[in-house]
Image 1 (cartoon, one colour):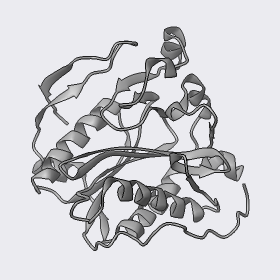
Image 2 (spheres, helix red, strand yellow; image 1 turned 30 degrees about the horizontal axis):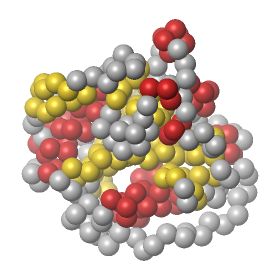
Image 3 (cartoon, rainbow, N blue to C red; image 1 turned 90 degrees about the vertical axis):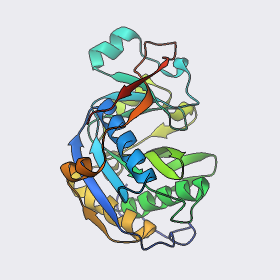
Image 4 (cartoon, one colour; image 1 turned 30 degrees about the vertical axis):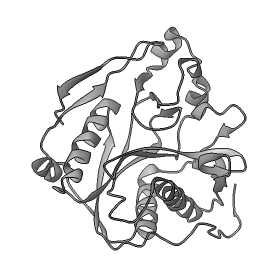
Length: 268
């Protein structure tokens, strides 16, 4: 899609907060390592050892299955999954199954939404709004689908959203397809939705879009919607403040049975 029409926001007002935040950019990170990092930062945010943090990264090829997912939404067999190098995880976010992989910008906001005066519904709409504004600056007129969460362009999902909120603090987040290999979505029923397809910025614009160029655009739109000044932070700085925690986590599982929870110390 080239020369898209001017974008007009249909969302409500921006989040009424001037609270500062920090942006942690990490590059490509194994899914389970990133999951452990989220849990560690959530625990620190809940006791106010850190402020709000937006984690931005990519994952290797991974399917994650949320609380509403079922095993039959994985369409590829074990041999195909192994050949493609796809990891699979049951996760504790809402929603169904989705894909993460190279060329996709994944954002994990660790926010205290109570302090920002938001409920979960308002938080989801705010995430959508930030992404809609970001892609508008790239020339894409995106919007919402009244039936489904996420960011959509002409019936195709451009960004998926799935979150968890615990004691007012969020984790998991959004996945924006920038130059993603969309063939990996063929191995699942994306988000459990059978009558929609997926797309990417590269496909819509007809030219390769660089993730490192999109990242600051998303960061700026996120700051615009959520308010406050968002500044870069180093992983080492956060790790000095947020100690390891012991918590129950769900391990990768062999389909179709869900794994039992076990407790261990997360080291990041």
